[in-house]
Length: 96
Length: 528
Image 1 (cartoon, chains in turn orange, red):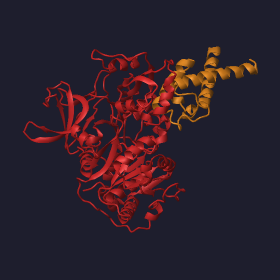
Image 2 (cartoon, one colour):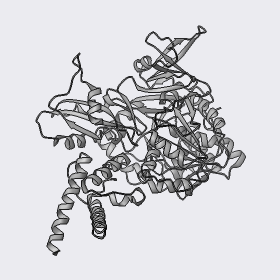
Image 3 (tube, chains in turn red, blue):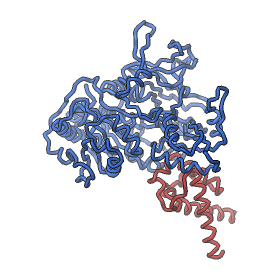
Image 4 (cartoon, one colour):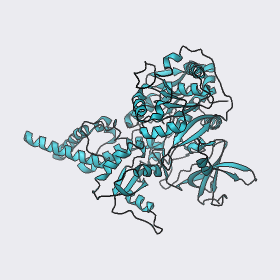
């Protein structure tokens, strides 16, 4: 895979994360680094909604035991989490 | 007996016992007693009169509880305020309360300053800097005094009023028209419940208990005074760990909590993440909830994970003080089982009545009324709303009793226990918060880009309990694009727990036969 393609797919992934999060939380687009908890967008109920929506949109499973609040602080951190989880599931499929 | 006597007795009996813990901070019963005495003396010196209202724009901290006791000892009535509420709503509450004083801590100082600039009513209230550090530079008047000044005051056990019918606090709850209602609660109201609860739960000195609810929510009243009556160590749960299931679970474990009390949503949240460790919490003895129905799958998970623990459901609105009925769940309920709200607590009475104010036969649904020692004297300076909610009832023995109409529907089961069947009006409980859907609609009504709107309860069959849906028709059809903008504006008017989670755009809202918006149908559409 070329470097350009990776950047490109990352940009697309972040776009998709942004749209899933914004749609689930009914919010206008915010700065990807903005703290969603401190700014009041994300509480415990909203967090569960976001997790469920991400699982559906990216066909991944987020194990409750692996839940780390810090992963959900911003659009940017959620994007990093999804990148990690999707690459893990790809690896699993490749070996499986 | 007054509400400050419990901690006073503990200070005499066992002053070195820890009274309150917040992370690394601990204060003993002796410190609690001394500093609240010194504060009471200071308040009396600056002219606080019995019955004067004192607002608390402060976080849930040991110093805040010292303030509560000091105000009570000086004869004042305390009003906990939600610093996270939009300024407009806070100003309504502060102005309605006609405050003599306002306590502000360093955490709330910034919001206090912006409040002062926006709302003239705030700047006229004398304020007190209630943090251990030196006050930050204020835009307005200098504080009346600071936390540090109080420690110079003589330690005298003040008790300005000894009439337990005197009001102790006022809590503001959601009102249908957008004007929050102040529920006035007396010392006696609180004492009746605490005496029953400490005996029923067999709370003991030295136990570790929790305070999860915010102070503007009346569950915290049980946490505070229950702990002090028993001589327990009250652990304040920091609000920021509530979104973090791992930390919340570690909190119960590491602090060796004996008794936990909260709204079910906090517990459902841990259940959703299966956060209870294998082997449970060895020290935990009792788990209590109040405020709304505990979603069954979550309750089952808790009971399966913690076999030796007592699980008790408490029920009751703010108007009847903390809780009026209780039910200890004897075994893990089956999937189709309903957990009752149970039997009245000592000193209370629950009545299920029909339209003619007669008691209904067993298993028939009617309106739930409450009588007894917990009943508030009414809403603060609102005789009309007080008359609507509080009335007289002639009981079977021909005696007239004062009763409160809860607005809840209920029935008496064949087992003699009371069962809850939802609301008769547009009030809901979401995450334990009591919300008038009308208050949300009235906030929505202030935007001119909506033609029609309706806010309805949404019951998804999961861990989340009741959530809120907003159905709307925009002036222009924007395929859902309008919702984020409306939601953003709502955030400036109502607290975040009132903001609808689900939004749906319609061409027109469905109506029933008599032309009213069909709210049942809307709820069902959100629940799909």
